[in-house]
Length: 157
Image (cartoon, rainbow, N blue to C red; front, top):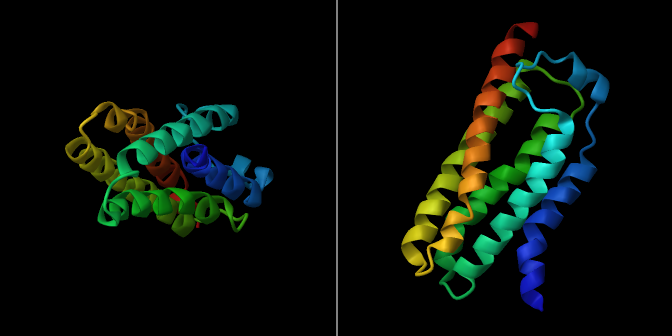
């Protein structure tokens, strides 16, 4: 039964961080955004699914492994979880903060790819590494989106 906690842990932490960092809608709406920016509700659908896939993958791949294998995946999750407080935390959007958020997305993507590669090579059942592919694809999209938001707003400050 404890495995359910491990599987749900990324979802629980991600949700708590999101709830604790309510954004300033008025300030956020002032930001210029690209025309391919999804509606806000899409993020609320996508991230819980991704966090569940991450939890399943991490649990089944890492459950019997040496702790050294936890380093890359946990650093990646650390970057992932840091995005919301950095981007939405101070309620004010300036180009430095938007740029830092972009860097966080890139680092999350890099560590996500490294995690996928690690899981692919250490796990006999490759299926669990494949569960990270939607996460990598979403982070790739988020990288482009984040850069474009930075590019559109960098002269505002």
